[in-house]
Length: 184
Ligand SMILES: [Zn+2]
Image (cartoon, rainbow, N blue to C red; front, side):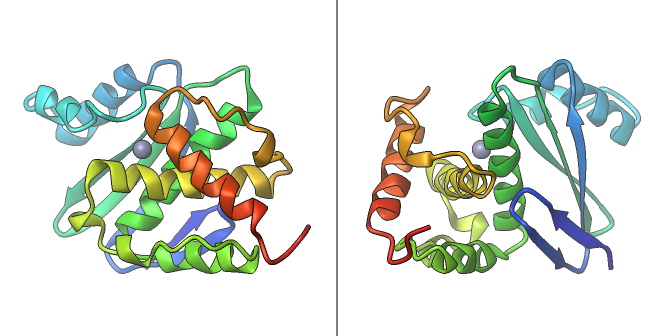
């Protein structure tokens, strides 16, 4: 069993049959997805179907899941942004996706509770049953948590984000921050 180190979230877990690899910044997320897929599969066959899986995902970051003999490896990579906030957001977002997918979202829940945040994720525990928007919600909550952890004032982030979904998720997180039982 290997440690799954989600360093941005500050969470390390051990899971049977799962591994996590963070490859950091890559020049082009889509091109890199193709390269990883080709290396893994040994051919380009099925590559279009693989890319189709990510059609709703953000273009600046990705986590791929590759399975062999019941073992799954999660591989995350990102496009570099001149904005550190964007880089941190992407890192936190993808790591939260992994945490969610391996069934350990309660660990993020604990982190939120330690901050006195009234955000309830227990309804989203089962990754497979979550809709795309619900998965994005969990990942964004993880991302905002990471931003705060690294000293970004999340309350000052503009309420209008790139997508309505992120804006809504941010509004929820900011509201919880304003009502936090713990001031820090
Ligand atoms: Zn996502």
